Image (tube, rainbow, N blue to C red; front, side):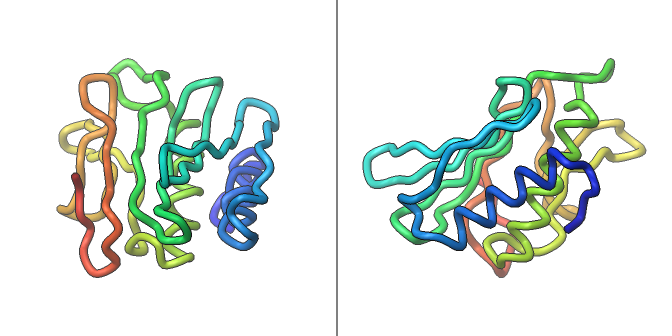
Length: 149
């Protein structure tokens, strides 16, 4: 497991639980400042992760098939308008697990570009900005390349 932070480990365990067991048997849970819930939008199953009551990640499934995900900034920012350190930590643990489960390309992370000071989601040059001044980042299901909506 990538993180040694207990609440990130909790979130990753809940993600694994969802991916391992029958999808409709998932039990929502909350621990400390982190919550995980499953809801349905028509035929779509949406697994949502929350930090301090703010959504940070949605993973969308069409039945048993991974359809994509949405990454949110969590509405907690540093002075530069980038997501908080805790938000980035939680997201990176979850993104790491999604890569290990082969749902997204490995190596997708939330990171801050040292030159611009902007926080991004992606890997290398395949990235989208994340923060107060930007829309949530949507990643489509494509294991070969990182595809954004």
